[in-house]
Image 1 (cartoon, rainbow, N blue to C red):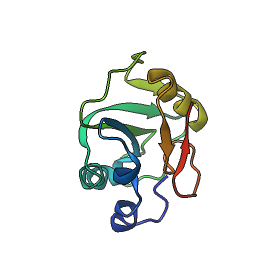
Image 2 (image 1 turned 90 degrees about the vertical axis):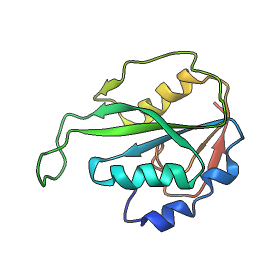
Image 3 (image 1 turned 90 degrees about the horizontal axis):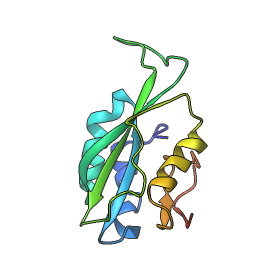
Length: 130
């Protein structure tokens, strides 16, 4: 996920460069990074459209509340086609890999690039076709 990267380091990732003119972006965003996630979406040239809520069994570290979820922000650029499948907005107790499978079922056959948010890979862009 975000790791210890700053907003500037994340902005430097080439999401805006490798995405097509009509593209979708899915960005995992824990509560403490939500404001920066919206900025990042805009800096990459996308606009926020909605989110999924990914719920886990165990809470994470706490400050005001102990979060048991993370948002998966959905953003678009241009006019991409709609999903083939529309899941519920709240997803419970799924491993990260299964979350990626949901996104691939929503948009089958569409090229995807994982910059580190779905697969958790610390590498740079890894284009893949489902």
